[in-house]
Amino acid sequence: MKRKVFLISMVFLIIVISISCSKNDNLSTFDSIKKNVNAYVQYCKENKDIFQTKEVGFNDISSEGGIINGYYFDNQQKYIKVGIFGEMGKKLYYIYFVNELLTYFVITDIQYDKPIYEEDFKVLEEDTNEYVIIKGKMFKYEIKLEPLDGVAEYEYKLLIEGFKEALKDSC
Image (cartoon, rainbow, N blue to C red; front, top):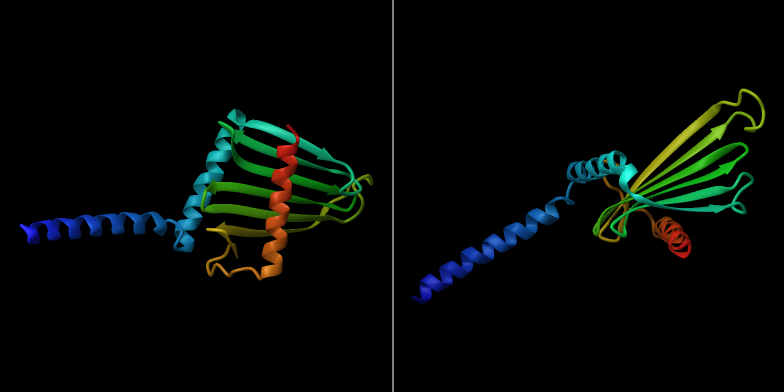
């Protein structure tokens, strides 16, 4: 009888461990993270029209101002889109809150060949950098998932929190 209870307990323990490991497996490889990120970004694009939005404008950030848009569903923040505009370019930030363990963060820096108020200005350069925050730690979003140095990680996380706070304060 003791042996049966022990075997049943062991089987149960193995099942619980394998289930918990498979849940964490969703964030263990670049491919699994990419699959989660891509699915979530697609979900946000497809459902953008049903999300509630908050918008905060701020003119003192640059020569042409800026705007923060927050997208929510059932009072849960889904993603944030930020644009900071200048006469010679703009900086765009996208922050996707994939789940409680994973955030996808994109920065796009666009430079123009001349000021936007001149005719026929063109995009001179567009540089995009992608990052993920996995279980609180920030990584460059590449196959190798290189962790960011402490200063860059701190600055980016502070920036994200600032955007979140600006939206929260807008209510």
